[in-house]
Length: 90
Image (tube, rainbow, N blue to C red; front, side, top):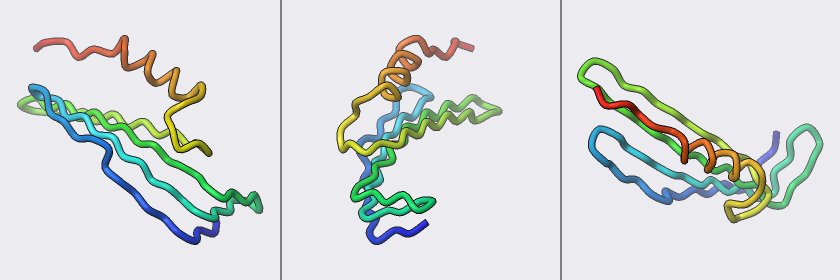
């Protein structure tokens, strides 16, 4: 794997009750993996961290894309999953 330039940004971090949500975007320029060259490559990461008195639960979702915007089947599936996702009250 060859990478010429990498940049990243925090898109959002928020806390609601005992849950922290975060979103990150990493952009790769001139990336080559297994002899496949790409001018641009994006890695979207979403995190959900849930804390109880005795445990910490972490969910990390990564979606790879050649587009700078959240579009495509991967994002549709993640949005559908998050819509139905719930953490029961203790």
